[in-house]
Amino acid sequence: MNDITAPGLQAVLDIPFYQPVGNECALFEYAFRNRLPLLIKGPTGCGKTRFVAHMAARLARPLITVACHDDLTAADLVGRHLIGDGQTIWSDGPLTRAVRQGGICYLDEVVEARKDTTVVLHPLTDDRRILPIERTGEELQAPDDFMLVVSYNPGYQNLLKSLKPSTRQRFVAINFGFPPADLEQKIVMAETGIDAMRAKQLVTLVGHFRQLKDHDLEEAASTRLLVYAASLMQAGCDPVEACEAALVEPLTDDADTATALLEVIKATF
Ligand code: ADP
Image (tube, rainbow, N blue to C red; front, side):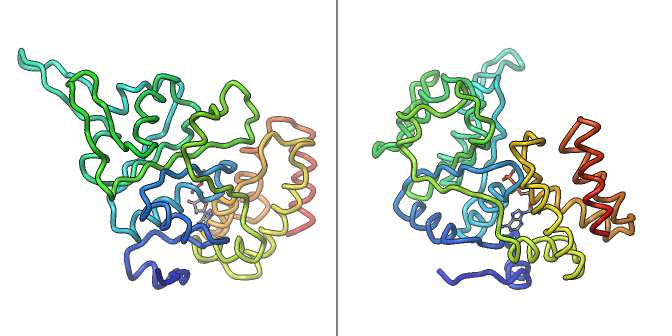
């Protein structure tokens, strides 16, 4: 596969912009071509969703994304009978649609989903690649161009909510972190159009904030928040106010921590 890293070229090809950080694009494609499911681990806002959207477009497969939550059941993924006009009709869930279409199904924050979802994920993620639909008696054989991608954030450190080894060992896994400073600067510039100097200031600032993680902040400042700050600045917002709104308030409710972060921002701009 050609390495498509230039934002302009990606835009021309109608591919969502994604700045590769390592070999993740090649790995994704190997997994796809070899019918292997993929697990992406990483903190919130580090580019997991964008990466999957980018790869789905590059591989020209439809993408079906499910934001998992703690009420999400196997039936929500597979489908259910709906009653209307006095009759019962079967309605495919997102996972079944992706299997039928030969698409990429992305289960975001899969650890949030109910445990009964493993019943449908396990037969799909071993060499059988089948989706049993208990309620209709069907058993779908996934086509070669179906791929299951799941993600989760190990940083929440919720032991009850980590994946069981019997589930995680069915996936090829990639670990995402925040991009190195030079690439993160490129991302912020490509996403917002902000100039190189401002982008560099923001990335440096966030680098300082990330060192505070584990001390004062529950979660590290993400690339997503960095992009928000740059967007506000590009729209004409004062840099200190933009950073307060995008990089302080979303990260902490603690007044002392917020004051300390604001001091670092004021020293930067
Ligand atoms: P996650 O799914 O990990 O929570 P996203 O994929 O939604 O995070 O990323 C959040 C935002 O950060 C994206 O909308 C995009 O603006 C930006 N971003 C992060 N990493 C990248 C990257 N490598 N290339 C392009 N944009 C990125």
